[in-house]
Image (cartoon, rainbow, N blue to C red):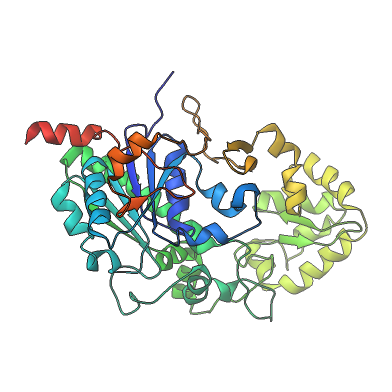
Length: 407
């Protein structure tokens, strides 16, 4: 069997909540050994988030921590710090999303880690970044959606901006953190040196807003909420039908010329008000009103069959229950099942990236023996198992083994 892509990578995960754990799950799904250190006493704050599962677990926490090993550690205790550095010497990556400077004040920052392991990659995820006037601000997803401008462009026209339906600032930062870690691993293959990675939720949102920011810098017009519509392209939004709403995306002039006769309005294709996308944008209000009247003449099912037969992108607005039972989701086996030691069988969304030779895995956290726990943790005053099973100290990574031989 082919080895997993990240099988020789060990990640020491000090992160909590969503952004960091989402990143480490992406890495663990493809073979990385992820060792999660939780704060003594409290543990990860996400343990109390979401619907409860049997055994005192929650769906939020379980779905974010597959394929990992975990232990509770008091990083303020000398033995907890000693354990941290022992693990740093054997790991490739440290991942953390503490308040900026918190770990450095404990003597556990990047510089201290690099002294123990020059090849360490130290990834810090924060709300606003490691420097700048906002660096010390506490930040959760909602705050960054607000500060970044994301809320200002989300919602119905003329209304107040609204939060995205998912924690998009956290999730984007997690994905960029995983991307940054892979880049740093690749760079280390050439140089032998690790480095610090600074990922901010703010800049993750700016990257998603890049097209809007670019438009503002070009024309000076401040973007506003447009509901399901899209300023750069139309018709590109949802419409009501006789039964349920329909999502329509006419993405080119070629499709526009096909679309108009299909809906029974061939005259719209050559109407000077709507001939080109720029024309349609100038006359958005009248065009959308006309199309809405047309779509109300048939059911969604009738429109779907007609539009799909002519290559027009169309879709239903599904709720989560409908998505879980969606034929494409079932055919692709997009939902996976994990046998959790306390919660039992838990279904969750699997990895969205599919490699033909090295598919993602989905495993529960593995337990280890008490003797292994003692070898790893020593006295319980510095660390102890929590609800997360403890772990054995990893063998030195392939990179660190080479480093040891060179010294």
